[in-house]
Image (tube, rainbow, N blue to C red; front, side):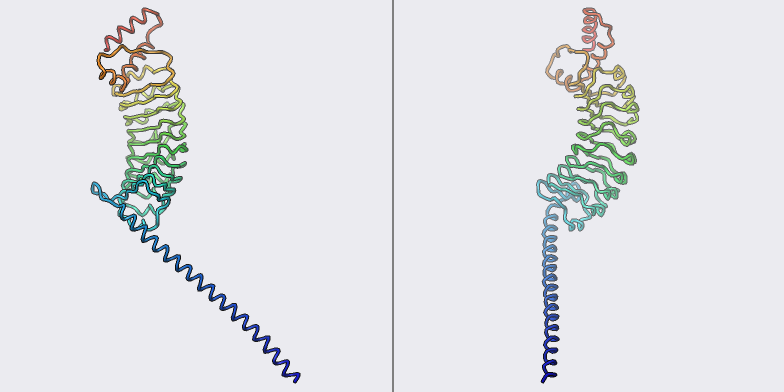
Length: 339
Protein backbone atom coordinates (compact mmCIF):
# COMPACT_ATOMS: atom_id res chain seq x y z
CA UNK A 1 0.00 0.00 0.00
CA UNK A 2 2.88 2.35 0.68
CA UNK A 3 4.19 2.07 -2.93
CA UNK A 4 0.77 2.72 -4.43
CA UNK A 5 0.39 5.90 -2.35
CA UNK A 6 3.67 7.22 -3.67
CA UNK A 7 2.56 6.62 -7.29
CA UNK A 8 -0.75 8.37 -6.77
CA UNK A 9 0.99 11.39 -5.20
CA UNK A 10 3.50 11.62 -8.07
CA UNK A 11 0.73 11.36 -10.64
CA UNK A 12 -1.20 14.13 -8.89
CA UNK A 13 1.82 16.43 -8.97
CA UNK A 14 2.48 15.76 -12.65
CA UNK A 15 -1.16 16.35 -13.46
CA UNK A 16 -1.15 19.68 -11.63
CA UNK A 17 1.96 20.79 -13.50
CA UNK A 18 0.46 19.91 -16.88
CA UNK A 19 -2.85 21.55 -16.04
CA UNK A 20 -0.99 24.73 -15.09
CA UNK A 21 0.97 24.62 -18.32
CA UNK A 22 -2.16 24.03 -20.37
CA UNK A 23 -3.92 26.89 -18.58
CA UNK A 24 -1.02 29.23 -19.31
CA UNK A 25 -0.92 28.13 -22.94
CA UNK A 26 -4.65 28.72 -23.26
CA UNK A 27 -4.24 32.17 -21.72
CA UNK A 28 -1.46 32.91 -24.17
CA UNK A 29 -3.60 31.76 -27.09
CA UNK A 30 -6.53 33.85 -25.88
CA UNK A 31 -4.24 36.88 -25.46
CA UNK A 32 -2.81 36.46 -28.95
CA UNK A 33 -6.29 36.02 -30.34
CA UNK A 34 -7.53 39.17 -28.62
CA UNK A 35 -4.47 41.07 -29.82
CA UNK A 36 -4.97 39.82 -33.36
CA UNK A 37 -8.62 40.79 -33.25
CA UNK A 38 -7.71 44.24 -31.89
CA UNK A 39 -5.08 44.70 -34.60
CA UNK A 40 -7.51 43.55 -37.25
CA UNK A 41 -10.11 45.99 -35.99
CA UNK A 42 -7.53 48.77 -36.06
CA UNK A 43 -6.48 47.84 -39.58
CA UNK A 44 -10.09 47.81 -40.68
CA UNK A 45 -10.67 51.14 -38.95
CA UNK A 46 -7.60 52.68 -40.61
CA UNK A 47 -8.64 51.26 -43.96
CA UNK A 48 -12.09 52.72 -43.50
CA UNK A 49 -10.66 56.08 -42.41
CA UNK A 50 -8.41 56.10 -45.47
CA UNK A 51 -11.38 55.39 -47.72
CA UNK A 52 -13.38 58.19 -46.10
CA UNK A 53 -10.41 60.61 -46.26
CA UNK A 54 -9.70 59.72 -49.86
CA UNK A 55 -13.34 60.27 -50.78
CA UNK A 56 -13.24 63.68 -49.05
CA UNK A 57 -10.01 64.60 -50.83
CA UNK A 58 -11.40 63.61 -54.22
CA UNK A 59 -14.34 65.95 -53.61
CA UNK A 60 -11.83 68.80 -53.21
CA UNK A 61 -10.14 68.18 -56.56
CA UNK A 62 -11.20 70.56 -59.31
CA UNK A 63 -10.04 71.36 -62.82
CA UNK A 64 -9.32 75.01 -63.48
CA UNK A 65 -7.45 76.59 -66.39
CA UNK A 66 -6.54 73.12 -67.54
CA UNK A 67 -4.90 72.23 -64.21
CA UNK A 68 -5.86 69.59 -61.67
CA UNK A 69 -6.09 71.40 -58.32
CA UNK A 70 -6.62 70.25 -54.72
CA UNK A 71 -8.41 73.17 -53.02
CA UNK A 72 -9.31 73.16 -49.33
CA UNK A 73 -10.42 76.32 -47.52
CA UNK A 74 -11.23 76.83 -43.82
CA UNK A 75 -11.47 73.14 -42.91
CA UNK A 76 -9.57 71.23 -40.24
CA UNK A 77 -6.76 69.23 -41.86
CA UNK A 78 -3.89 69.34 -39.34
CA UNK A 79 -2.25 66.40 -41.10
CA UNK A 80 -2.61 65.19 -44.65
CA UNK A 81 -3.49 61.46 -44.87
CA UNK A 82 -1.19 58.99 -46.69
CA UNK A 83 -4.00 58.26 -49.16
CA UNK A 84 -3.29 61.68 -50.69
CA UNK A 85 -0.31 59.92 -52.29
CA UNK A 86 -2.77 58.32 -54.72
CA UNK A 87 -3.37 61.72 -56.35
CA UNK A 88 0.14 62.30 -57.68
CA UNK A 89 -1.24 63.74 -60.92
CA UNK A 90 -2.23 66.93 -59.07
CA UNK A 91 -0.64 70.13 -60.42
CA UNK A 92 -1.63 72.48 -57.60
CA UNK A 93 -2.24 72.33 -53.88
CA UNK A 94 -4.25 75.22 -52.48
CA UNK A 95 -4.75 74.66 -48.76
CA UNK A 96 -5.66 77.80 -46.81
CA UNK A 97 -6.67 78.17 -43.14
CA UNK A 98 -6.71 74.43 -42.49
CA UNK A 99 -4.38 74.50 -39.44
CA UNK A 100 -2.03 72.23 -41.37
CA UNK A 101 0.96 71.59 -39.11
CA UNK A 102 3.24 69.57 -41.34
CA UNK A 103 3.99 69.12 -45.02
CA UNK A 104 4.29 65.34 -45.57
CA UNK A 105 7.60 64.05 -46.92
CA UNK A 106 5.69 62.15 -49.60
CA UNK A 107 5.18 65.52 -51.28
CA UNK A 108 8.23 64.49 -53.33
CA UNK A 109 6.00 62.04 -55.24
CA UNK A 110 4.01 64.92 -56.74
CA UNK A 111 6.41 65.49 -59.60
CA UNK A 112 3.75 67.36 -61.62
CA UNK A 113 3.23 70.09 -59.01
CA UNK A 114 3.44 73.60 -60.44
CA UNK A 115 1.94 75.53 -57.51
CA UNK A 116 2.22 74.69 -53.81
CA UNK A 117 0.08 77.23 -51.95
CA UNK A 118 -0.10 76.50 -48.22
CA UNK A 119 -0.55 80.05 -46.93
CA UNK A 120 -2.22 80.79 -43.58
CA UNK A 121 -1.63 77.53 -41.76
CA UNK A 122 0.52 76.36 -38.84
CA UNK A 123 3.45 74.81 -40.71
CA UNK A 124 6.67 74.86 -38.68
CA UNK A 125 9.06 73.30 -41.18
CA UNK A 126 9.70 72.97 -44.89
CA UNK A 127 10.77 69.38 -45.62
CA UNK A 128 13.90 69.04 -47.72
CA UNK A 129 11.92 66.75 -50.05
CA UNK A 130 10.32 69.87 -51.59
CA UNK A 131 13.60 70.32 -53.43
CA UNK A 132 12.70 67.32 -55.60
CA UNK A 133 9.79 69.20 -57.18
CA UNK A 134 11.66 70.33 -60.27
CA UNK A 135 8.50 71.55 -62.06
CA UNK A 136 7.40 73.77 -59.16
CA UNK A 137 6.96 77.42 -60.15
CA UNK A 138 5.28 78.88 -57.07
CA UNK A 139 5.87 78.11 -53.39
CA UNK A 140 3.54 80.19 -51.21
CA UNK A 141 3.93 79.59 -47.48
CA UNK A 142 3.25 83.01 -45.96
CA UNK A 143 1.50 83.27 -42.58
CA UNK A 144 2.96 80.10 -41.09
CA UNK A 145 5.54 79.33 -38.36
CA UNK A 146 8.58 78.47 -40.44
CA UNK A 147 11.96 79.37 -38.94
CA UNK A 148 14.47 77.84 -41.35
CA UNK A 149 14.48 77.50 -45.13
CA UNK A 150 16.30 74.32 -46.25
CA UNK A 151 19.14 74.53 -48.75
CA UNK A 152 17.50 71.71 -50.70
CA UNK A 153 14.91 74.21 -51.94
CA UNK A 154 17.52 75.25 -54.49
CA UNK A 155 16.65 72.01 -56.34
CA UNK A 156 13.38 73.63 -57.50
CA UNK A 157 15.11 74.84 -60.63
CA UNK A 158 11.94 76.26 -62.23
CA UNK A 159 10.77 78.22 -59.16
CA UNK A 160 9.61 81.71 -60.15
CA UNK A 161 7.71 82.92 -57.09
CA UNK A 162 8.58 82.39 -53.41
CA UNK A 163 6.51 83.91 -50.59
CA UNK A 164 7.72 83.53 -46.99
CA UNK A 165 6.02 86.59 -45.51
CA UNK A 166 4.74 86.71 -41.91
CA UNK A 167 6.49 83.64 -40.60
CA UNK A 168 8.05 86.09 -38.12
CA UNK A 169 11.19 84.09 -37.25
CA UNK A 170 13.12 83.61 -40.51
CA UNK A 171 16.41 85.52 -40.27
CA UNK A 172 18.50 84.18 -43.15
CA UNK A 173 18.41 82.21 -46.39
CA UNK A 174 20.92 79.54 -47.46
CA UNK A 175 23.40 80.75 -50.06
CA UNK A 176 22.36 77.85 -52.33
CA UNK A 177 19.11 79.68 -53.14
CA UNK A 178 21.05 81.91 -55.52
CA UNK A 179 20.85 78.86 -57.82
CA UNK A 180 17.17 79.67 -58.38
CA UNK A 181 17.89 81.17 -61.78
CA UNK A 182 14.23 81.81 -62.68
CA UNK A 183 13.05 83.33 -59.40
CA UNK A 184 11.70 86.83 -60.07
CA UNK A 185 9.29 87.40 -57.13
CA UNK A 186 10.38 87.13 -53.47
CA UNK A 187 8.41 88.16 -50.38
CA UNK A 188 10.33 88.11 -47.07
CA UNK A 189 8.26 90.72 -45.22
CA UNK A 190 7.51 90.52 -41.49
CA UNK A 191 10.37 88.28 -40.42
CA UNK A 192 13.68 88.83 -38.59
CA UNK A 193 16.13 89.77 -41.34
CA UNK A 194 18.85 92.15 -40.13
CA UNK A 195 20.37 92.40 -43.60
CA UNK A 196 19.55 91.39 -47.15
CA UNK A 197 20.92 87.84 -47.53
CA UNK A 198 23.75 87.19 -49.98
CA UNK A 199 21.54 84.62 -51.71
CA UNK A 200 19.07 87.40 -52.58
CA UNK A 201 21.77 89.74 -53.89
CA UNK A 202 22.95 86.94 -56.18
CA UNK A 203 19.58 85.91 -57.63
CA UNK A 204 20.05 86.69 -61.33
CA UNK A 205 16.39 87.16 -62.36
CA UNK A 206 14.96 88.87 -59.27
CA UNK A 207 12.56 91.69 -60.23
CA UNK A 208 10.25 92.09 -57.22
CA UNK A 209 11.40 92.08 -53.58
CA UNK A 210 9.50 92.86 -50.38
CA UNK A 211 11.66 92.82 -47.26
CA UNK A 212 9.50 95.23 -45.30
CA UNK A 213 8.83 94.96 -41.56
CA UNK A 214 12.15 93.38 -40.68
CA UNK A 215 15.21 94.65 -38.76
CA UNK A 216 17.32 96.19 -41.50
CA UNK A 217 19.46 99.09 -40.33
CA UNK A 218 21.21 99.63 -43.64
CA UNK A 219 21.21 98.47 -47.22
CA UNK A 220 24.34 96.76 -48.59
CA UNK A 221 26.83 98.95 -50.44
CA UNK A 222 26.67 96.55 -53.38
CA UNK A 223 22.89 96.59 -53.59
CA UNK A 224 23.15 97.36 -57.32
CA UNK A 225 23.99 93.69 -57.85
CA UNK A 226 20.21 93.26 -58.02
CA UNK A 227 20.33 94.95 -61.39
CA UNK A 228 17.04 93.50 -62.68
CA UNK A 229 15.01 94.68 -59.68
CA UNK A 230 12.11 96.98 -60.63
CA UNK A 231 10.04 96.88 -57.39
CA UNK A 232 11.67 97.23 -53.97
CA UNK A 233 9.63 97.36 -50.74
CA UNK A 234 11.73 98.18 -47.66
CA UNK A 235 9.08 99.80 -45.48
CA UNK A 236 9.01 99.51 -41.68
CA UNK A 237 12.69 98.88 -41.00
CA UNK A 238 15.38 100.96 -39.24
CA UNK A 239 17.38 102.19 -42.24
CA UNK A 240 19.29 105.39 -41.53
CA UNK A 241 20.85 106.12 -44.93
CA UNK A 242 20.82 104.93 -48.54
CA UNK A 243 24.01 103.82 -50.31
CA UNK A 244 24.96 105.66 -53.48
CA UNK A 245 24.91 102.34 -55.33
CA UNK A 246 21.12 102.43 -55.25
CA UNK A 247 21.23 105.03 -58.03
CA UNK A 248 22.84 102.41 -60.28
CA UNK A 249 19.76 100.20 -60.07
CA UNK A 250 18.68 101.42 -63.48
CA UNK A 251 15.56 99.24 -63.75
CA UNK A 252 14.10 100.31 -60.41
CA UNK A 253 10.67 101.91 -60.87
CA UNK A 254 9.12 101.46 -57.39
CA UNK A 255 10.92 102.24 -54.14
CA UNK A 256 9.03 102.20 -50.83
CA UNK A 257 10.99 103.42 -47.79
CA UNK A 258 8.20 104.58 -45.49
CA UNK A 259 8.57 104.14 -41.72
CA UNK A 260 12.36 104.03 -41.52
CA UNK A 261 14.99 106.23 -39.82
CA UNK A 262 16.10 108.27 -42.83
CA UNK A 263 17.18 111.83 -42.07
CA UNK A 264 17.73 112.88 -45.68
CA UNK A 265 17.06 111.90 -49.28
CA UNK A 266 20.32 111.41 -51.21
CA UNK A 267 20.93 113.55 -54.28
CA UNK A 268 21.90 110.49 -56.31
CA UNK A 269 18.23 109.44 -56.54
CA UNK A 270 17.73 112.20 -59.12
CA UNK A 271 19.77 110.08 -61.54
CA UNK A 272 17.20 107.27 -61.51
CA UNK A 273 15.35 107.99 -64.74
CA UNK A 274 13.02 104.99 -64.49
CA UNK A 275 11.82 105.70 -60.95
CA UNK A 276 8.04 106.22 -61.05
CA UNK A 277 6.90 105.60 -57.48
CA UNK A 278 8.69 106.53 -54.24
CA UNK A 279 7.49 106.77 -50.67
CA UNK A 280 9.43 108.50 -47.88
CA UNK A 281 6.50 108.93 -45.51
CA UNK A 282 7.06 108.69 -41.74
CA UNK A 283 10.82 109.18 -41.76
CA UNK A 284 12.50 111.73 -39.43
CA UNK A 285 13.74 113.87 -42.34
CA UNK A 286 15.79 116.91 -41.30
CA UNK A 287 13.89 119.34 -43.50
CA UNK A 288 10.22 120.08 -43.76
CA UNK A 289 9.04 120.42 -47.36
CA UNK A 290 5.67 121.86 -48.26
CA UNK A 291 4.52 121.47 -51.82
CA UNK A 292 2.36 124.13 -53.50
CA UNK A 293 -1.40 123.45 -53.57
CA UNK A 294 -2.79 121.37 -56.40
CA UNK A 295 -5.37 122.66 -58.85
CA UNK A 296 -7.45 119.47 -58.84
CA UNK A 297 -8.17 116.57 -56.55
CA UNK A 298 -6.82 114.17 -59.16
CA UNK A 299 -3.52 116.02 -59.23
CA UNK A 300 -3.30 115.88 -55.44
CA UNK A 301 -4.04 112.17 -55.39
CA UNK A 302 -1.45 111.54 -58.06
CA UNK A 303 1.17 113.49 -56.13
CA UNK A 304 0.34 111.56 -52.96
CA UNK A 305 0.50 108.27 -54.81
CA UNK A 306 3.79 108.73 -56.59
CA UNK A 307 5.74 111.01 -54.24
CA UNK A 308 8.23 112.02 -56.94
CA UNK A 309 7.61 115.75 -56.65
CA UNK A 310 8.26 115.63 -52.93
CA UNK A 311 11.53 113.77 -53.48
CA UNK A 312 12.81 116.19 -56.12
CA UNK A 313 11.74 119.26 -54.14
CA UNK A 314 13.43 117.93 -51.03
CA UNK A 315 16.68 117.28 -52.90
CA UNK A 316 16.62 120.74 -54.49
CA UNK A 317 16.01 122.35 -51.13
CA UNK A 318 18.86 120.38 -49.57
CA UNK A 319 21.22 121.70 -52.28
CA UNK A 320 20.36 125.35 -51.63
CA UNK A 321 22.55 127.36 -49.24
CA UNK A 322 20.78 128.51 -46.09
CA UNK A 323 19.72 132.07 -46.82
CA UNK A 324 16.42 132.88 -45.16
CA UNK A 325 13.93 134.72 -47.38
CA UNK A 326 16.20 134.68 -50.42
CA UNK A 327 16.44 130.89 -50.18
CA UNK A 328 12.65 130.58 -49.78
CA UNK A 329 12.08 132.71 -52.88
CA UNK A 330 14.42 130.52 -54.94
CA UNK A 331 12.69 127.37 -53.72
CA UNK A 332 9.25 128.80 -54.49
CA UNK A 333 10.30 129.75 -58.00
CA UNK A 334 11.78 126.31 -58.59
CA UNK A 335 8.63 124.55 -57.45
CA UNK A 336 6.44 126.78 -59.64
CA UNK A 337 8.60 126.10 -62.68
CA UNK A 338 8.36 122.35 -62.12
CA UNK A 339 4.62 122.55 -61.55
